[in-house]
Length: 180
Image: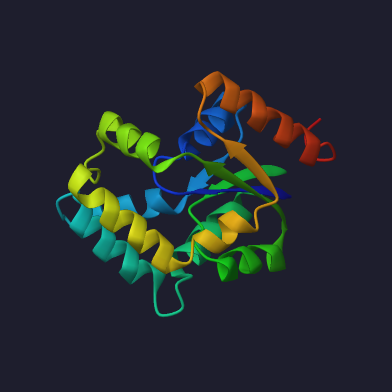
């Protein structure tokens, strides 16, 4: 099994990897999906405050609880190539690497571009007011370390097609033994 761990700051373009995986019929797992599902399950309003609160609870004392949940789902899929998004600290990457081979792919984009994307996508937990707070929370989780130590990078400042081409090259280069 080869896991492509997709990381990046909010609105850096991680969903490009989701779209790519879906187009190729490859499984895509995201810790954010687990958090949003839990928010709904608890009957909470899907806003930035509730999402952050549930995320913190699921991460647990060591910060890796939601990653453990996602990794369980990934490993039970028994697929040869899988995408996993949402790791925010280096210990989470190490946890994954203890279980399976992985390639960490970081999506990068300037703050101003990420801010405008966040407003445009219109998710319930996105708001201009919460943007700065969310960035600070991500950095406090430790997300800057996996970004700095990623195996591959996509500077996502051009078109979506450009980013997809770059991702496709990364996937092909790193999964030749796993994709027929």
